[in-house]
Length: 441
Ligand code: FAD
Image 1 (cartoon, rainbow, N blue to C red):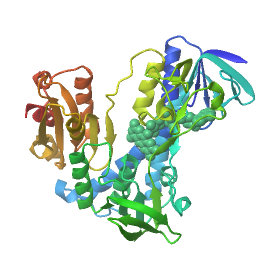
Image 2: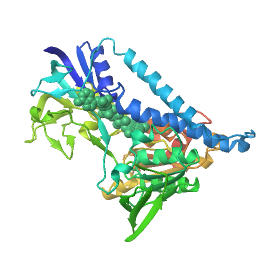
Image 3: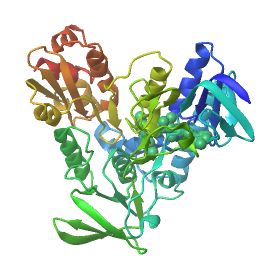
Image 4: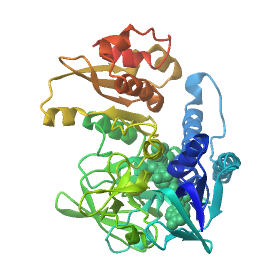
């Protein structure tokens, strides 16, 4: 049996980044991965979608080339070339991750528990002082007739030709990103969302603005739509305000959330699974049914269901290594055109907690850089505590929202007041000036 200081199951951003941090701390590390290093994020998630987002942005820019004083005669999409570029980017980054693994005992195979602290993979047995489960998640299913006819995000990413039309069931982050990408490539897109607004965790005002903006770009978005069946001819039936309705498209895709992947025979550890996810305490140690922590057994990233984002998975890994404390201040972004991003409390959450707060808003229309870029759609909205002047939340729709949110995250993580942030000199002309303008409100 091979014993190491740390044994990690799963080589996604949670697993591989934690393996590298642990090696830097001088620990011996075994990492077991059954598929490709980089996990969902690098192979089927963040990176391939962002490669497609970039091609989609270029397609949109080309279609407006006249505005920039440029003549572009052929704006047709070579989807084979788009896909090849995406695959090249994924392969290049995966090679980069593989090259970093020199000092890690990397085992290729499926990890299965054979005891509470013993794991088998590739016919070998492994144990460690600390075992970290980082097995991630897979697309969630929906209990409706015809579900198997719909494509998951994994399959959407491996399409080899553009469909004429596409229905996406689910208006969350993944669904909206795909809607924005395929619409920019000229596909007729319909999104069916069960809730009364898209992007349920986002600030309602921002989500509504994004919905209106995407509608203006030609995406058909139906909210309050309860999908009832998917038929073999491409028809999707749904209930809307009590009435049965239907839409039809060449392809139907489904993006209704993600479901944790639990290693086989994990029950041998005695750890609790709740609503499909491994329950953990704030140090990422697994919990028993009685609520006590299991020393040395951790679950990080999507598998613990706390926050299904790549940067949350890596942060969980740092917590498991004892390098930092857990934080709830995790920014999140949607790479639509225009982008959206958020950190902290929404206005709805502040209202429901009866907090005393002020809201400041500034639009990109008043930002010189955004006007020069020709991307003025959107705003920065900040929520500030009325008595302490600390920032409670920041919500952005607009160009590079996912980058600007980082500045608000740094300020909030360090407990800066709105005034302290405004005392910083902001480079001119930048999109970040809109954050300052909102804070000055
Ligand atoms: P994963 O990345 O899922 O990695 C888990 C790994 O464990 C996999 O490689 C798997 O093969 C391996 N594994 C599982 N079981 C076993 C076993 N028994 N033995 C051995 N190996 C095993 N997040 C963002 O932050 N930003 C984005 O822009 C973003 N875009 C996304 C777009 C899409 C389409 C999708 C699907 C997801 C996106 N995400 C994004 C979410 C992000 O990909 C995940 O939150 C992140 O990958 C979770 O990391 P993880 O390490 O927990 O798990």
